[in-house]
Amino acid sequence: MRRRPRYSKEEFARRGEDIYERSIRPLTEPGDRGKYVVIDIETGAFEIDVNELSASDRLRARVPDAQPWLRRVGSPYARRFATRRRMTTG
Image (cartoon, rainbow, N blue to C red; front, side):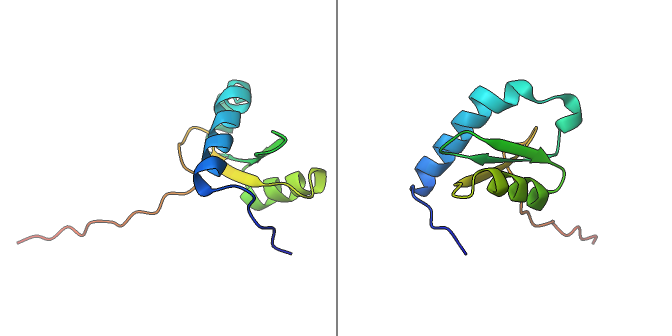
């Protein structure tokens, strides 16, 4: 069952970022860099794992009605989509 967001995209991101910076980032260690953090933006509950689905599943087991926000430790993004420039010679 897909849960509907209860907040605007802007409020969702603001809450997730605030919880991460205030409560989670100080707890992370160098070995956590690159791992996924899944945060419930309503309760502040979170899970960290190298696998985003594992972290998400554990969070949902603890907080079934979670509003999950995803981020990677050490990065401002959860995922980054970029195109590669093609190098041409000539």
